[in-house]
Length: 424
Image 1 (cartoon, rainbow, N blue to C red):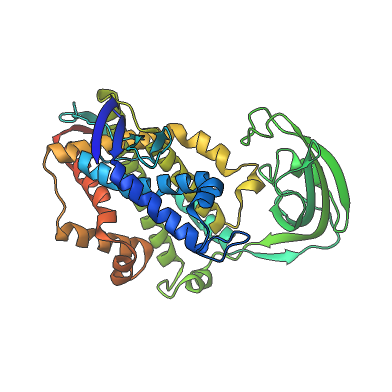
Image 2: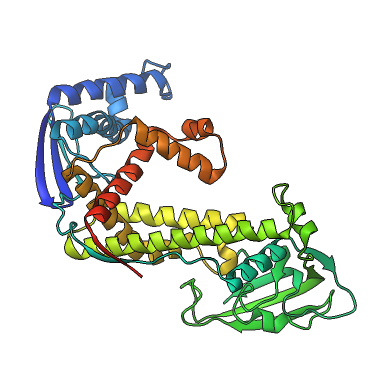
């Protein structure tokens, strides 16, 4: 087998592979042997059909099968021989196959760019100091807890109002096509400006339980789902029941009900204050990292493989879907779908991939490595973050999955140690 690699660009290579005739002939013999054993032709017992008839009826099928077998067997070997590291699926091109000739094909694929990182030492950066939790922040956190643990009670004798929860049967369509899955039964909605679709809350406000309304909503030109932006959606809404949120009293009993570790309301307030400070510290660190990424991307220009951008965008969509699922929300109910979100996320995804590739190159240039102590520390952090046993985290995540994350943090720590930082 002959292998030749052509450099198309910094992120694309063309691999040309020539498979010798002997291998091609052997694959044809094997394919026809299996076909003859299994095929049934009228007038012939299984396994007795003549080769001439098999070639007459199944030539195209066998050629396709042989090409597939040769590709599956030769492509991984060719990649190893060429010492290439594709980050995308190959685009295969071939001119067909003949039994008594060599078979050649080309595979075009993307690779990571070769980066010589520049300008990562001596960066001038600002870092925010973490302030204590303010009174308003603490009050907001307490109200958030009350809202989380509020109960809902059925309301009778009055109409639907803002802040209420309504249970609807909905049937929506856009230009004759079902919208958001079409008919939805027992759809649970809080009545606010962000409910379901723009303008929906205003249309259903004042409804009585058992009432039905039909109306048309004009979606804005900048609506998140481009397939429906600027269009009209016809809605039939049947309100089945109204529920009102009842907030718990903020006292010592409320704190004890939340957790045994709180003996009184002051204990809860102290814990919330600590959480606020931790969150603000994490936000500040995130903002500091983003400034590092901005500086690195500005100082290092290179093309990014489309496959890596697509993969990161899909991962971001999956994270969004999981976050919404935890709240019992589907993308479709927000007028979104995975396809439109992937397109929206391509810009941020490219930025994240660029930053990761630069940090990877810095780690390699500076000889940063990962040892068992680093893995142990990372497993401990993840166990604390997710409230699980370390053994369970180890069982769920192989060390090699964590290696890029650890190396990235080491690269950021290296950059930070060399930077000129001003705190504000």
